Image 1 (tube, rainbow over the protein chains, first blue to last red):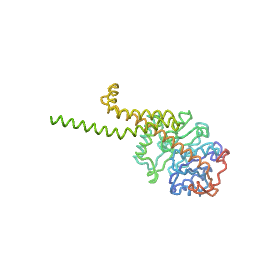
Image 2 (image 1 turned 30 degrees about the vertical axis):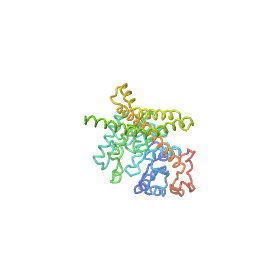
Image 3 (image 1 turned 120 degrees about the vertical axis):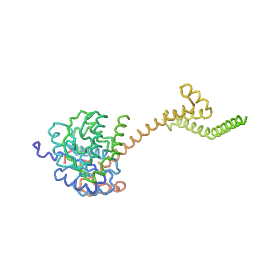
Image 4 (image 1 turned 135 degrees about the vertical axis):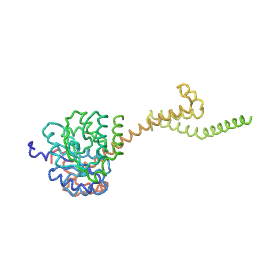
Length: 230
Length: 156
């Protein structure tokens, strides 16, 4: 990247982790090769995830009880802002994301071209994605378009980046998986410039088992609708 | 004659059960009504809530003591039977209660998340200091907090 050689030190990578003891160390090792500011929020894990993270040289925050990915990300974002982050990247702890995509995500923000970037597996590549998962995600995109009037190609991608100003204005209130819709909603409503960036997602058996089932997708949809009403 | 006698016996039995129901329920409703008054007078409840409680118990008592009142009110508002009026009012009250408690639960969840977040940020560690398990947050000295977890804003 042409802009500032020390750009990696201006980035805080925030991960919400729940029962990821098997994967978390590998993900952290990949990240800390490139980024010195990695924040892991252990969301009340019961499998020793916090102990695995504590052995590494990253920031560790612990939720004493499980509050959901949205809540954990908001905690991590708030902490990163306190530490002076200029750009905040959210990254999944299950190993689905590719840390090499982070540069493409932050470049437009550091260059002042936009305030938020959202990774899209459908503009990039989703490796080993089952057809059922692809269909659920596509329905989610249509739902978001119908409810919020926003058309994006990949609403439930955890790989995103925000400028400090955009991140400061975010206030995630939907603690569970519906936070993705809420984030996009807030970014648009507050007038921040955003862009979609092609990224890679790698599916494994474990990540598929943890991902969104049809039932989870229905729950998210109902939470988003209720939030609009109440 | 026999069938008329049977009908009369059926009506008498219904009246008997109704009186039994009134004998059991009216004292309970009266006690709840008095409790609502005391809650209002002694300031144990917000005035609006206490008044609502009094209105509910009063309406319930009237409907039980004089069931024909529900029939007259139902006729006024264009509903067929008194029992249907009671059912519709109950359904509306139930839905309102559901919305009320759902929003209460959402607020409680948000408060819990804020508390959990506060503790998490206050006890953040940076991998260079020894840590203690989250279970030891209560009762054991907390881990050495990271510089900047409270107020500093300088980047790492």
